[in-house]
Amino acid sequence: MTTPVPAKRPANPRFSSGPCAKIPAYSLDLLADAPLGRSHRAAIGKAKLKEAIDLTREILGVPADYRIGIVPASDTGAVEMAMWSLLGARKATMVAWESFGAGWVTDVVKQLKIDAEVKTAGYGEIVDFAEVDFDTDVVFTWNGTTSGVRLPNGDAIPADRAGLTICDATSAAFAMDLPWDKLDVVTFSWQKVLGGEAAHGMLILSPRAVERLESYTPAWPMPKIFRMTKGGKLIEGIFVGETINTPSMLAVEDYLVSLKWAKSIGGLKGLIDRAAANAKAVWDFCASRDWIANLAVDPATASTTSVCLKFTDPRIADGAAFAKAVAKRLEREGVALDIGAYRDAPPGLRIWCGSTVETADVEALLPWVEWAYQAEIAALTQAA
Image (cartoon, rainbow, N blue to C red; front, side, top):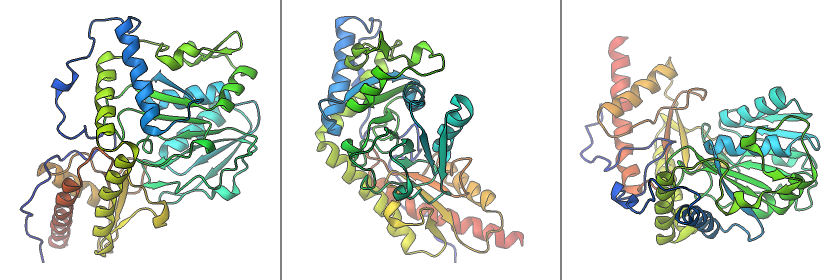
């Protein structure tokens, strides 16, 4: 039986996993205070950059002795900056369970060519952190944007570790509780959970990471854009808003608008609660149907931001073609944009449930997903 066309539509059909939906009631008018045409080194530019760092610290609860810097090239730039600057002092362990984590493995093993053990898990699963040697430097993603799984907590990371933990938290920061005492380097980008504009990354360093920077010089040449020390000492200006390269003050203003909105809804707890409510709507939908399921194998590790789904109907012979057809049908109807699975991931859908998304829009989308699934199954039946 074909599902009738749903009567209700999402007010905002943007469920892309990056760049992600802007904050509710967003308007370009909110950026009117951006100091356009002014130097980022002018007093007003420095003040804006410092405000972005200070609000980030306040909302995320970053310890006072951790440094926070705004760096170029989004989360990718922040992760590369950390790896090129910090790795090589001791053996490393590269942990990956999705596409971006696999990319960091490639960079360390094939480009930096350092001594590293590689631990991987398939899509929908994570590596057992109890088997990771934290006396090595460990690089991992907190939340797998392309696989829909996350670390449930940092309990397996020892407080007395000898190595550094380098965590790519780009789709976790602002939507998940990060245990700062277990993390030495944390990176993320503006365009994920807060829906900011792309191209800028955030790099957060613990005192242990700073100590490594000041006591270790990598064997390889260091590009200027990665350099965080001068004369063996940390360049403190980077962490008070004196950026390595020219930032977009329009993007900075956009980030500030998002941070202030986050503060207005209750800060980190409010953000976490919104993402959790969105994800639960999808999880409940899947639990009551036998043709669709969460890609995450263990519910305890299921992501609350990038919720990845797979079609389980045995009548579907070509999963990639079917999932693509469903996503295209939803886009044609204008009810869901950019929700196809990541190109390297198993076929399916990926619904962004981060904190800027309204739960009412997720709930309005799900009947459309069922409608599109039924329509494509009917098309398969007719073709047969």
